[in-house]
Every structure is written in C-alpha cells, then in structure tokens.
Length: 180
Image (cartoon, rainbow, N blue to C red):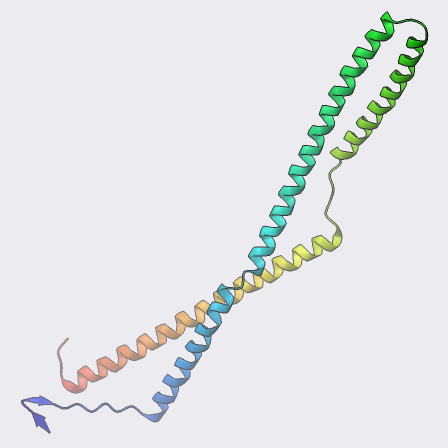
C-alpha cells in the first residue's frame, strides 16, 4: 500500500528475538535494582570512619594526658627546688617537717615518672579487633569485586544490545535499499 509516495514498512520481530530482548531487559532491570542497594550501603564506610575517629580520639587523649603529666612533673620539680631552698635556710622542727615533705614529694615524683613510663607504652590492638578489621577488609574487597562484576555485566549487555540494534538497522537499510 502506498500513501503519497511513501511505502509503509511493517516491523516484524520473531518471537525468539522478543524473548531474548525481554530477558536482557529484565536482567538489566535486576542489575539496576541492585545498584542503589550497593551504592547506598554505607556500613563499610561508616565503620571505617568510626575506627578513624576512635583512633584519633585515643591519640589526642593520650597526648593531653602526657602533656598534663609533664606539667605535674614540672610543678613537682619546682616545688622540690623551693623545698630544698627552704630546708637549707630553715632550722629545728621546720627542717624536720620540710625533710618529711621532701620525701613525700620525691615519692610523688617517682609515681609521676612511673605513670609517664606507662603512658609511653604503645597499646596493640586485640586479636578480636584485628580479626574484625580483616573481616571488614575482606567484605569490602568482595563488595568491590561484585560491583566491578556487575558493571562488566551491564556493560556487556549494553554492547550486545548495541550490536543487535546495529545489525537490525543494517538489515533494514538493505531491505529498504537505503544508501549509507
């Protein structure tokens, strides 16, 4: 049938190609459905941020504690110096009291030094924490692998669709005798 010099073209798809197209579209739909779930799953990121925060907090807290201990050491040192000056100039029962204070201050200074030595010891993570970190790293690697695999599948399906469409149009051009 002709209308004003233009031939009507009837599109004919075989049932097999329709089924394949429906299957491919449903596969793409499934993959697209999974993408937001994968992208919006922030548990790995949030856990990493929490660990970094806790580590920074422990470092800052440890630094502030060490700084306070140094201040106490300086104060005790200055008191000891002042005490030694007073004991050198004093006499009698005042000297005995100052001697007792001197020994107490020395004990306090020794305790502060022991506490400083203990604070300098680095703490290592427990085996449970190390295992949890390793498990998170493995889950993250698996997630990234699955994500890459999904991207490759989608890319391959789009390339196949593009080839099918290119073939379809080239067949149409041949059937309709259209020059490129």
